[in-house]
Image (cartoon, rainbow, N blue to C red; front, top):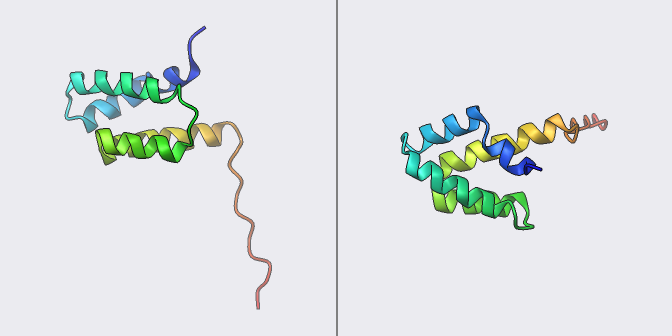
Length: 89
């Protein structure tokens, strides 16, 4: 059975965006894929994972992974629209 976490990172759109963030350096992408696969095996908060991505691979990679997390969050119905403030004084 294939790991869902790896499937989300290995998508063509994600890999292309990451390659662009790494100035089309396939060796950096390969290292990132190994790094992120290892990181996803660790029970940690998404913010900690994103900090690790930023520290090791830069802000562009962090934003790509953050966007991916947000997309999955919304697709699974976990996004709740903020309630309007009912106190209009």
